[in-house]
Length: 199
Image (cartoon, rainbow, N blue to C red; front, side, top):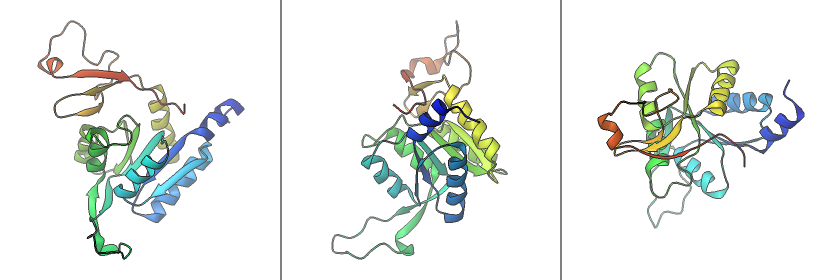
């Protein structure tokens, strides 16, 4: 049972869930509520996710591997978007844009991605897009909790390179290694150490 102080901290954390499946999103919301998080916003596509992040600070993003994106409406079109106006978009593309776009509302926000358990290549692509942690379907509350704890204890630097921006993909204490000159060291710039916090 979390202490009152821990519960107060969790209540202040703004969580954004991106999932095109209403059922899966409701499951995620229930898990977060049981863990003590109170501020959970659910959106169904990457466009809504970006707009939500522009409106208020978000401390944690949970996104599904498969998302949807709205097509840009015509200037003369004032009707609300329908299913035919929404195209599939991988969660990795959303994360990549979140990390690298100059218009990103928060390129440093911690991101957890949900992937299918039988798709190892998806996990590799998610890591290379800049996610902090990966959880697999079917979603288990204890696995989500473990990944959140890993995120809280995470001491990896946030780096930017020619083809990558996000948390250092290495789990070692020194992300660039000690006493080893690597080619990638000349291309990588440490931005700052980003810790998971609500303030």
